[in-house]
Length: 306
Image 1 (cartoon, rainbow, N blue to C red):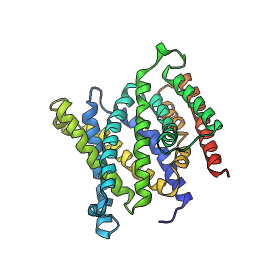
Image 2: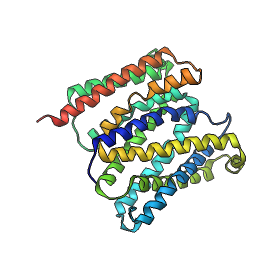
Image 3: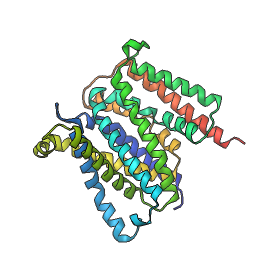
Image 4: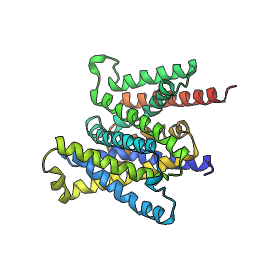
């Protein structure tokens, strides 16, 4: 398939809008609702949203039969499915405990983790400029997690917990991008496959350590199911559009488009929901945005340098 940068950037902008709303939707689950149960149900609604296109692709011959996939591809699918299952549960918990604004700012560390993983495991060396912006980004994240004090004693461990989510995403996306580039498997097929694996993974965890009876009881809870449905559909659309974007542009370019996500979340929180935003959150968002754009620009220059 031929690459179209304009299409990739358009997909990334749509992802920006969805990503800004998702933390608010994740925090909209009823008070006291079990996080793992909510994660399982939103995964179910994600899967249901993706099935129509999956069936259409299968009938038209666009979907790659699973029998053609190599053992390595199947192993990556299983691993990334489990990673996404874990990150989904962590996302739901972080939205409630850290708050949508702090969480969405922490999620902006995604490019940092992607760059670090590429440097460590793929041997991609970084310039002094990239290292400088990385240090600035780390300082801003530390400022965020200490709620503006820079004191270790004031660390918000739920904000620190939220940083683990983009770490898991970056690992999974780097693994999946190679499959998307090397095979004809469609983004929707990747999404549906990983949702099935994620769902099985979370059901297994629920069977071992979940709150008994909550999965069945929540079936008739309208407020619970409405919140799970809205987040599930939004999550599905963001995933499949993100995979489409990665087929046309690099992960770093797509990430640069979504940098302003926290600003949009803040605007919705203040103007639509009537909530409040702390000064340290605004300052952290600004510094992180500057660091990310500087990091991504420095990386682009390093790649095009002779």
